[in-house]
Image (cartoon, rainbow, N blue to C red):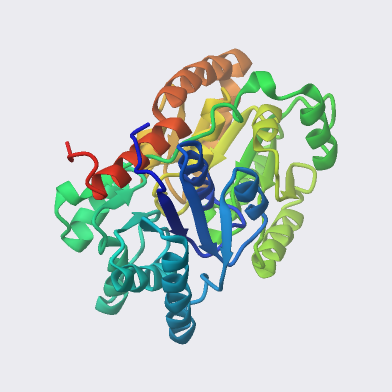
Amino acid sequence: MPDLPAHFTLLQVTPELETGGAEQTTIDVAHAVVAQGGKALVATRGGRMATRLEADGGRLAQMPAQSKNPLVMLGNAARLIDLIRREKVSLVHARSRAPAFSALWAAHATKVPFVATYHGVYNAKSGLKRWYNAVMTKGAVVIANSEYTREHVIREHGVAADKVVAIPRGVDLSRFEPDVVSADRIEALRQAWGVAPDERRLKVLLAGRLTRWKGQGLLVQAMALLKARGEDKVLLLLAGDDQGRKGYRAELAAAIAQAGLEDAVKLVGHCDDMPAAYLLADLAIAPSLEPEAFGRTAVEPQVMGRPVMAADHGATRETVLPGETGWLVTPGDAEAWAAALLEAIDIGASGRQSMGRTARVRARRLYSVDAMCEATLKVYAQVLGLERSS
């Protein structure tokens, strides 16, 4: 890890700490800073992951960072200015657009360096929205979470290429390690999810918050197509929090019932033990309708030795090698997803296990949390003038 200055204090600003890749990355980087002897603050509304932040030695600065109300954003800027001065913050790192405005204003007011991570490929159908998105490019460096995102930032905002660095999200290899997952943990999930001990169907896990663009509805359509053809060898597990989207969850439940798929598709809710979930499954699936800026649910299962079936667009083209570590499937095409599931069945357990082994070796090499944190701290050191940019 690069050396950080004595008394280094990092302030990360993110809407909330409920669930998701950006939130996990926030906690991972906070942990790395603390491990280097620094202080790590996170300004956020809070959420279920806040306890993990504090357990790792980070500190929570609670404020309505999720708000897009201009008056609240101004209030947040004042709160951040006070926090920066009180805690002698060395660098401010924004991880989402609305709080980035408050963080940028506060950083300018206190003359503290500012960086931002572009965690998603934000759509801009107007000049105003493009201006709103561009707040993420106003720092000394823009961190992109994949090469796909980096190219988007350069093209969309006209940012100089040497100002944008791609740092893929990292997976905690000590947590996502098959050998440390006990049989009891897998059994507890099996029972909670109602998976029979002698289940012989292909267990397919779609992990992701319940929102339309993640593709749960598309997979229900694909399962209905398979059922219509008399194919009943797949058990689909939809793991994810609806985060208040009760209407979409109800819509999924209705589609499952209408197709008579109650025994073949299970809405299992939020999962706190994803390593065990991936080991319970035979295959992980990521059918996002829109391109993923990174897509950790296509990477974590590979680290656990499971092949992945993902939509053929966005950063999953970087993280999944078709025919070697999994499948890339036409986005939004239920027929194509049904056919790919049949192919995954046809190659048998040995074929899937071989893919999983290849996936594990590659993913561990490219997507470790240690590599991600080291690259991020190197950016901090460069911005603070401790290292020359290479």
